[in-house]
Image 1 (cartoon, rainbow, N blue to C red):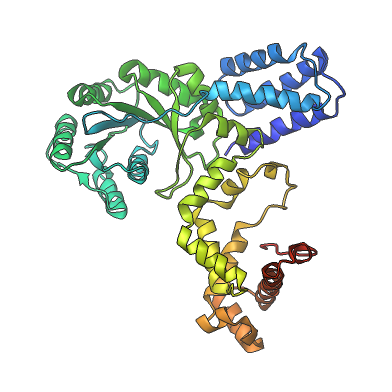
Image 2 (cartoon, rainbow, N blue to C red; image 1 turned 180 degrees about the horizontal axis):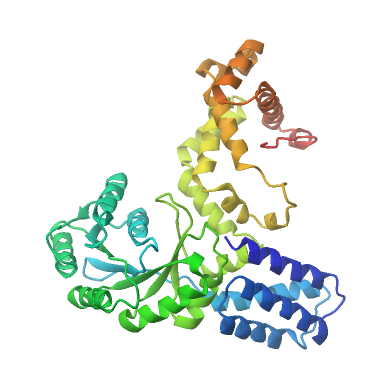
Length: 442
């Protein structure tokens, strides 16, 4: 997510860090490179120009304090302007005073509306709401079945009427929600091309029939500037309330995220960061700007961790660590929780400074899979007492996990070092415990 843009901006800032002071000349050269980086990221040309002009106006003539470098000052200005460009603050989804809240999901064919609808239902449920999904896409053969499958996975009900048109389905879903104490209805409408007048009339008719409290336009982030053009055409007909960017975990260059708010004057409310049904994030402009500039996003990282780690479980783990009883079984459990936080590159991108790691220095996600396979190939007794693992047992584990004996030996050696460190920590000798400690996941 934004990797290419982040790398190019980091290169620009690195050049400025070598300057003793800010001048019109080095500011001009830096902003020229910033403009190129934005255009390469498929940011709308007018948005890129206005952004660079705004940074330039603020930077030229600024005195650089003795406590900061020219590079740090430019980063500060770019960050503040980027937050303003992205929308300044998080935009919440509507919550009607008289339930149910009706959310209409619209967008192009193939943009990921159906999957997003299910993700949104799961997200709203985690916030205490009681959602109902409604299958209002009557044209794509598998759309209804797909939504029903996703609903079953999430244990969220789906309103289906295979004999009705989209308008009747929307009305029926709202009525069903009222009768069954569902406070939110999410209408998954059919994908359409903005040039398809008949389909545009249908979604407008659905809007007029149920008067949704929230209309969300779903767009594939990988389409770049085309996403802005499409959003403009839809906005003329629907006047939607917010934008959802899907496939942000793919090859998206960031242009859509940086352009839409400025061009359409509607906030980005959510972004989809993976295929899993929990891979949906609320869009925080300040956090996204931090990620783009390589400053990390510690708040989002903590929130993800809190979602995955149970307090009672953490207390039990702390007790085990204190008594030096941490086993490979416990290690496997922690490893799985880390994996549930999302792709490792996404998690690392939230840690400040991780964008500056040299190529190959970041942990290999495949290594986590191999470690999990090795531990799973052990018996419960072997996980709790690794000391019994002789040569023949290690060969069996290597064969069972599809790894080598050397990899099994390396994991056991590293785990042994970690146990020694924990014993020292439990005795209060933390300084010596960390000295010389090395536990790479590779």
